[in-house]
Length: 117
Length: 495
Image 1 (cartoon, rainbow over the protein chains, first blue to last red):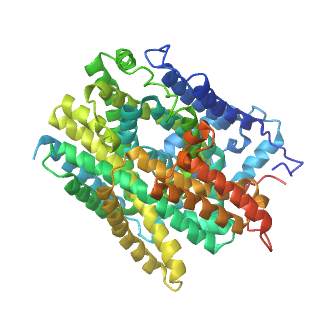
Image 2 (cartoon, helix red, strand yellow; image 1 turned 135 degrees about the vertical axis):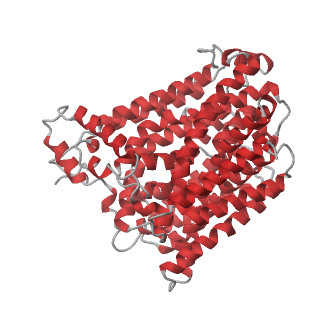
Image 3 (tube, rainbow over the protein chains, first blue to last red; image 1 turned 120 degrees about the vertical axis):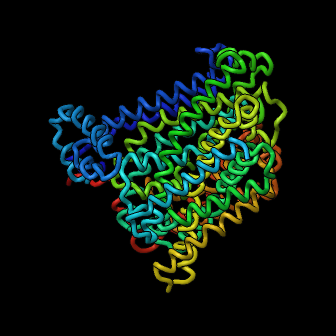
């Protein structure tokens, strides 16, 4: 992707993906202990659960920041004949609504989304 | 015939009925049978992939591992999360490539990536090798559930045979359409049962989660974290790395990728899946609740922890409901695995050997392969005594050997040639097979190595060998001629 001078989509969001990994590494080094209990759970377990929540948050942030998920070009074929139609349509609709405008001046984003289908 | 058995049989009838219903209105050619015509939406792909997540491994394996090995069981939560993070970038290019090249199985993707039918054959063999222990896990789970919920009226062997026959009939009749529909029912049931057991069992036996963990800590100090030796931090990290790498390399996980209609499904799923994985935590809670209540299970027996405690706690009808949830966790993913394995056997082993066979013949072969593979799995189930997680880690050790070749093709195609990929794969799988057959560990192989090397998951050692050999051979024997068609791997951008 970096070979297109016209459209340098931001890839900085990728660095966020390191957070869950670092959290897991910290888990086995400094958080590997039973005491103190956190909300009744052993410390190592609480740390691991926090990591899962962190992962979900980080992935949601990445999903929003990633130019590949902009525009509705992919949402349309997603509306299907089965139960998921409405749900997935709504999710992607909301998300694309949310991020359009955000960096909308960047022509490359919409151009890329267009070629993404 | 007690209440538990009745509920189990009803659930079974329901699964078969939805399976048969699902095939209505769909012409069952091989593409429909195995990848659903590549037309499943985000939610259905999510359900299929979650279906793979919630197997017997989750239900009995995770609770059993928590019971048997304490804090080490948390590796399951960590690796699934990291695998989802990887999937965000890994699955879309695989999906694009498979779609562009009409690939329906994992070996086809590899063969195309490296433009090497030989690599395709090798990957087919490796994938089948890895799937067998995973199938055994499901059979074992089915057998345990049928046996325990029959309150001893059925022998373990009979129970395994019953479970295996059910799975084969189910798969032969409905293919993946059946799996997707039953998967929805299964996920709801497992979710409810897991969360309920994970909260109720600690409450009932210990007065709550907090008191339960305090009692365990008092009785067995340190059990709830990682020990200094054995399943320690090094073991934990290497096992997490191995399993996270391997999670989407399972042939059936690959197949689920092919069922998607759009690549954005995968990116959406990567956001939601970590939360969905939290349910496994509840299954572990149930396992921990059994630590002080049904002590004394060891080895392969630890998988019984959740069921034994349930038998001790609930009326037969509710044991039947738990058994039904457990049965579906074995049946649905097991059938997906069987479908991938038999599709793979027909398309990637049978067809290269009998090139003149047409599609109709292949469809027949893949459907005959299902009972054959079940038979192999049943015989291995009846013969072996390993715990579910131990079996699965063996499968992970094998299947992860596909990672270097795949990742190299996606990230740095110049570093790996087809000869390198084949050599690396042979060495890696050979090493893992050697350790499984001989029972060798890094401790016996490298007695002089520092202590942390001995605690490494053996699959990681195989992976390192694989990588070194692949890169080395690729330097010595680079691919000649034009590189294989890798253009669609990268997301297309405006020019």
